[in-house]
Length: 396
Image 1 (cartoon, rainbow, N blue to C red):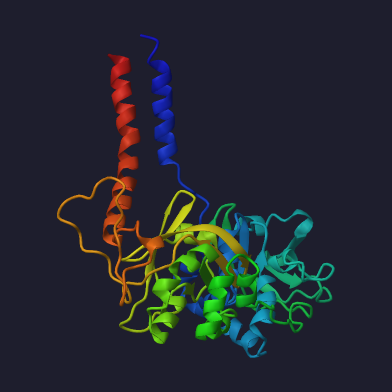
Image 2: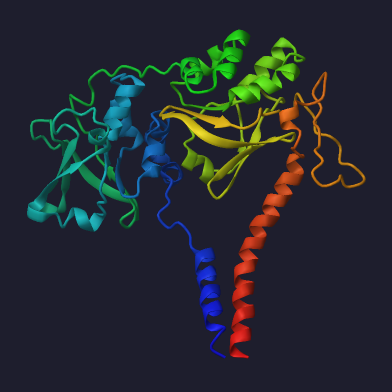
């Protein structure tokens, strides 16, 4: 029977598609966590937000400094922004494994770094010279360091060919340009929100005084989830029923004290603490994604990220289609004995009133999580089942 052949081909394609994974993913923080003697270097990659940049790159080489080497750099008391430039000089935007280091054409090579990629490095100051010396040694030096080769290769920590290579070098690379004082970026959260369709949310931050907490967290990394103006306007009758401290907690619930790009949110599903998190009052929510759609799930409601207002590390601001309702302030409606008619909406209760009408189509996170987990499981089973069934049909 020749007709089933296209179906068999389709089934095989589905199986191959379902089994496809991202092989190039890497996480510099996790890799270095296996090497305690590099804990300081690892820490400052996170503080300067370079770790996120490294993880986003497909091909990268990190020249790692152990704790002793980092101590000499930290003693210079550089600002976090200047330190970012210095450390970015230690991140090459090309792959160099141990073997490649000893196979450099003509024994020397000039390669670009992430410092050069920022556009902040004048001339060729963002380049590093790699030279294969006699006796099997390999030396490194910043291009703007009068030809001096400051450091030598010590050992390889980890290599994932053509993806990421982490090599220990003996000491920091010296560069006058990288160490030049760097001003902090000017990022006014409320001004950004006001100009990008989130003025109502911005006004609430200012009126409640919560904006100071957002502003104080920008330098260390901040992710803001902003309900759009129509959403906030529809929520206002419920918002007015909250006490002043409850209003502040609700607003702080819309911020995460770290920078999380959209790609990072997609790959780090799970519980997230917020600016409102404080001891027993957890004020957390769960990040989930279904393909390109990212949702934020509380025990009361589920909001969807609908757009990006601004993404300029260390700040990223997203628009969401609902106000996030923390379980510490709101509660979900108890499960009904009889199923509701199709299209009927559940209603969440607030502390002094019912939950806002724009949140009325949400169910508890327990139900949502169950559906999502089941859905993920179904996808993994369907493709092999189709393949098996069609294959049997074909051979019969």
